[in-house]
Image 1 (tube, rainbow, N blue to C red):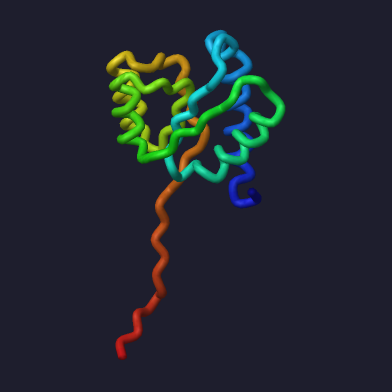
Image 2 (cartoon, rainbow, N blue to C red):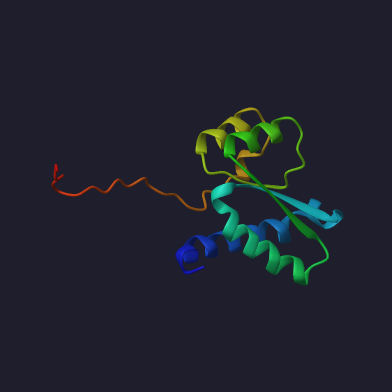
Length: 122
């Protein structure tokens, strides 16, 4: 959890505010969270904590962002979508499958390549 501390906090705030302020969530028995597989550890911890204290059960669905976006496009019951690729989120908003005003950037990252200064040849 230490590795994800900042991202966990941001996700917790977003996750619970989405659940608490969503009028549709109170009429349901289950809340479906579609999340990029890179978020599995954090989302599992949040879901476990939330499910022990609430009547509405959170059901996580993990996969690649593109795959999840296509599922949503074809009617998957996603209540919250945590994407790892902004282009797919834009695709869903441009096609009016999610409300642009509900999109929030929780975190970002960078790919870093590390190599030795000198490469030794044997």
